[in-house]
Length: 519
Image (cartoon, rainbow, N blue to C red; front, side, top):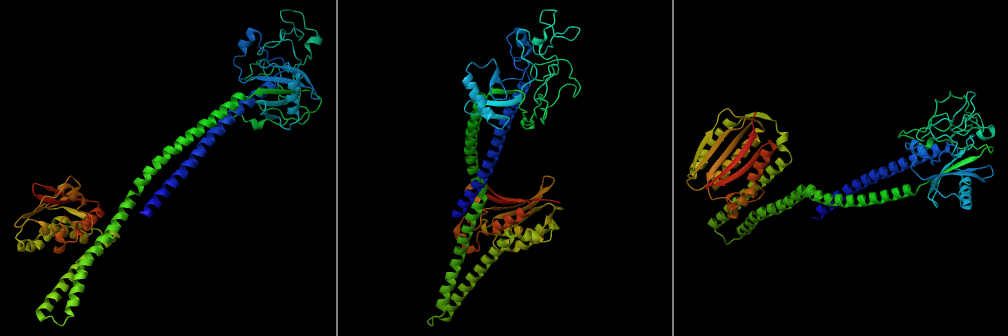
């Protein structure tokens, strides 16, 4: 049984290894894809904000809040504009108190000391994005057009003050060319800003006013596409002449979301592991059960075979010792010789049965040529052969064989199975009883062979075990050349022919039946 335990343990170990790998892969993909999605959305937001000039994000007026409802910005953020020396010259944001300049300067210095354009400040739960400042001047919120609107102009193209027909002085309107220059994240006010609430006239033709300075690569177009790749954002090539804009976004919610997701995934993984462990243990017992049964049967077979051979061998050895004695007369010697002959004959029958059972187990039936067998004629011939034996024991043998029934299989083994049932009937039938052999069709594709004999009622427990090897209802019948192997051999033969065999006991009649497929 130690081997069975090892087999179960290996089954559980292999199953749980596969389950563990699957759980790691599944939850690893969930965590990775979720983090990538959150990070991608965050970087997309930062990239969008970096292209909007400082002051454009203020939504103090109600109509501007309405127009910016469709923006994709979801995280609290603020922006800082710094000069070439790293000094703060302007701030922008409605979510933070930006009056503490020392703290802001500390953040800016930390960002500028890094080489990465995008990064996280874990100590502050912030993510930053560096970009070059747009050439557009900051406007007063009261005169700045709302996102999605173009500034009013007169017939000469000069900007008009809000609510007035007078043009804005040049010192207030700033650069008449409102097309931002240079930065790879800068967008023209006249260019549509997707997902940022900025709308305007059609985009001007390529290279019609937007120039890229230095070796900067323009930012990829930021859209609502799900396949936005943060890695597509180019490196920042600062020329040292223009100011920088640093966008900061709060990532506390992202960190909390990922921590909760990791905790939930670990909890689910542990529970799943335990559930699969219980299932694996159950299925290990179920899967190994046939092997365990075969192992038990094999040990029982060896034990029973040894026991069956021990008795005749003991008799033979004892009688042989007696024959060596000089004190025995001729009649005694003859008796001992007959005993030796009888026991040797019994041993030969047992060994033949064991060999026959071993051959069937090793696939001897499959090795035999398969042929069409006239089962009706075969049973009639066997009945004629056994009639003399039944008559000598005072038994009647009757038949009810339907003609024209044929099967496909091994003639030798089918004949042997029929002989086993007839021999079993003549051994265990009541004296002067009548044994009935019948063959008939069972459905459209099967036939049924039955051998019924009167005898002692067989219990339900015995009916279940009667086809086991070396199983005998009455151990005293062992001296009647009954080894408990015949029905087991017949069962193997029938099973190999895709049939089934069983026994019934009712009203003092014991019936053995075989069902086989017809051709």
